[in-house]
Length: 147
Image (cartoon, rainbow, N blue to C red):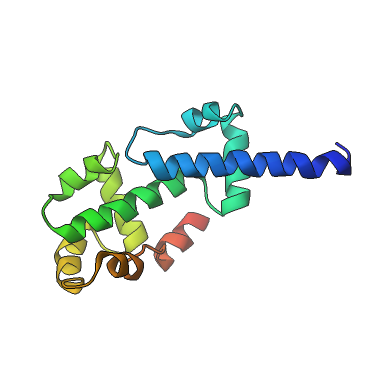
C-alpha cells in the first residue's frame, strides 16, 4: 500500500471503528459479540478486535462490558431492582460473569455497590452521580489482565 492510499484507508478504518463503538453504546443491552459487530461493518472479527484495541485501548468485548457495567451502576444506585434484574437489564446472560466483571471494574461486588451507592449518592443529581461513580478499572484488574 502506498503512503498516499494509506491515510484514506486509515480514516475509513477509523470511521468503521467509530460505527462499531457507537453501536455498542446504543445496543449494549442487546446480545452483541465481536463476530456480529464485525459483520455489521464487513470486516473480520480478528481485524476488528486488533484495530479496535489499537484505536481505543481495549477490545470490543471489554468496551461493551464497560458500557454494561456503567449502566448497571446507574440502575443499582436507583435501588429498585435486584442485582439479578440489573444483570439481565444490561444485556448480561450470566450472573456470575456479570458479578465478576462488575467487581473487576468497580472494585466491589454489585450487591455491596448497591448498598453503598444508594447512600453515597442520595440527593445528588443523576448527572453528577454518573460522573462521580464512573467505573475506572481498579489496579488489581489491570495487573491481572497483563499476566
